[in-house]
Amino acid sequence: MFPRSRKGRVLVGILAAAILLTAAALAFFLSARNPADVTNPDVAFQTTSAPEPVSKPTDANFSWPFYGYDGARTHNFPLERPLRPTKKVRWSLRSNILLEFTPVAEGKSLFLLRNNASFYALNRATGEVYWKKLLGHLAASSPAVVDGIAYCTILVGERGSSKGRIVAVDTKRQKILWSKDLPSRTESSPFVRAGVVYFGSENGTVYAMRAKSGKVLWTYKAGGAVKGGLAYANGKLFFGDYGGQVHGISAKNGKGIWTSGGGGALGVGGGQFYGTASVAFGRVYIGNTNSSVYSFATSNGELAWRQGTGGYVYSSAAVADIPKLGPTVYIGSYDGNLYALNAKSGAVRWSKPAGGRISGGIQIIGDLVFYSTLEKKTAALSVRSGRTIWSVPKGQFNPAISDGKLLFVVGLTSMFAYETKTAGKLNSEPAG
Picture 1 (cartoon, rainbow, N blue to C red):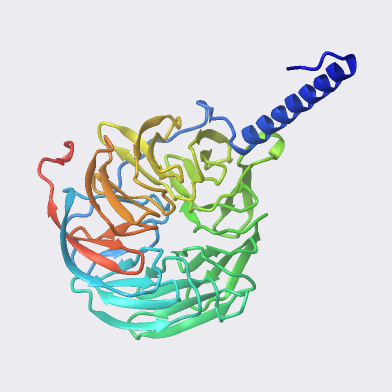
Picture 2 (cartoon, rainbow, N blue to C red):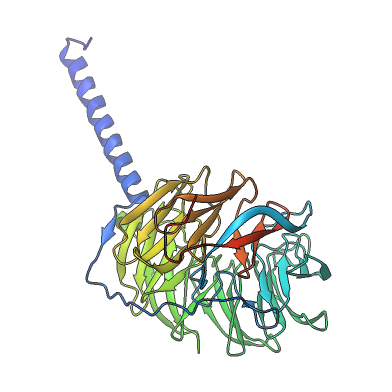
């Protein structure tokens, strides 16, 4: 019951006003922290020819060189004839050491970097470990492998240190080619092109080093930690930082071309960009801890769209032009859903409850899209409908790669090679 006195009515009015102001401030904060969806239809969008599919790769010429498969980090591995994973394990590599990132491959070998910075070379057909080397104290990235040299970014070089490291390993001679200590930690999966290795670091420095020697060719300073790998397209590198900015810079000299923010009212709640950016269709696609997924024009950084989810987006996106669906971005969220978004507009094509929070990257293999959850599940869905085709109670972060014959699934501490069978009719809805 409200008080009847004038003084009481005044107090009630003051309290009511304070409550309204607090509610307005809270609403402003939440809206800034979770910015509204945006679509700018006039931003340029380029349709491109589909990548050449991989058909029966031989041991001698097979290559999966980078995290995300290609330099643009599309996480799209095209196959001439789609595969269906079975539950039969051909081989496994077991350990009690955390394994967050997928391996890379060249020739007959897989190359794997565990979280204790131990680097493995193993036979991809049999799982036999050829050799291994300890490269530091802590790591959280995938290597890159080009022309028999593997490049590994090390989060912590020595126990108790705040410095990172990058190491080049000659995989044929089984020896370290060169090693460089860094002023800060790095968990940015490296990219190599034309004799130059590129990666970011936690003090915001992006490096271009000569691949043969480790000589620094140039550096670029971002406004926050660069956690993810750098994506490459048409002479430019693209990445996000923990200051809430996305950058496009020259791969030749490191000069900044554009910088765009993650949004949020008055700059509040712009969030942090953790995942590795993906590039396709003249756009950069990247998730943010403010729960949004963003698309920027590669030419000038103009915001094309922003699509909200219900939780943090640490996941790295997979991007492809899907037959009978169109250009699509697949990305996971801490809200427990996998999203298929229209690559041009950001509109949700479909979303699927994943059975847990998705933290790691997404991977397309043929006509299936793979994800893992923090609740230790890895699954494959139809790229067109989101229907579950296959799942196993293994995995936690980044899900899998394939050589077109076996599926290599990363568990919490172990890796499993699953046998596959060939799908039937091409471009048809996968059979459950």
